[in-house]
Image 1: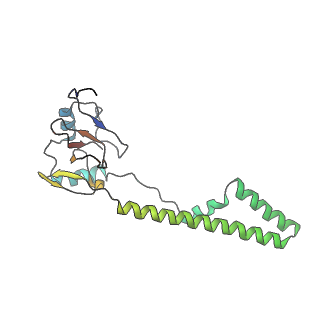
Image 2: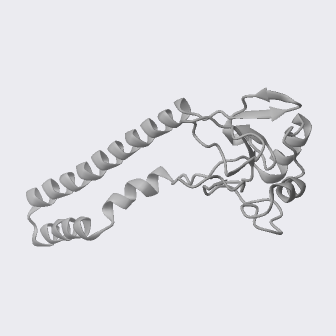
Image 3: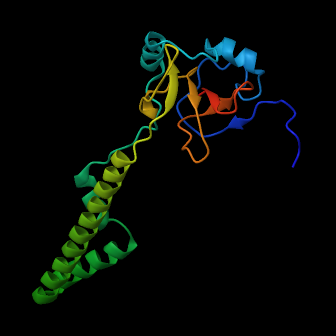
Length: 184
């Protein structure tokens, strides 16, 4: 194991756009990072954090929601559904009505079951996300507080311990290995 050379370590994860990146915040000296972010090891004030939250937005990845009707109709699009649809059309053209209705019912049943299973899985994932909402430990107004990780802003000083989920892109502070400055 190499001895620590005194350089700050970087924690990387993709997140929301970085503030005014004149230099790469991961490679700049810590003093320059603090200056550029307008922060210090003592953290931000609650008012400054609220201002930055409105300026940069929440610390989260935006999720795209699809229209449920379009999602349902997608079960009729693709090579296998096209073959089944062709079979339905050919059965109707030649007048085999029992085959026509059986194939059509099976096609519709497949789409309904597939849509319902995916919808239920999506609801389960949303429930897990809500239950596992990450909290961060942050210095605000000189005190440690626990806001939701989505409320972190660039320049926040966060505390991380072994086993913690890293709540944002961060840079370890030289003075205390348990504290980091949020770069997100």
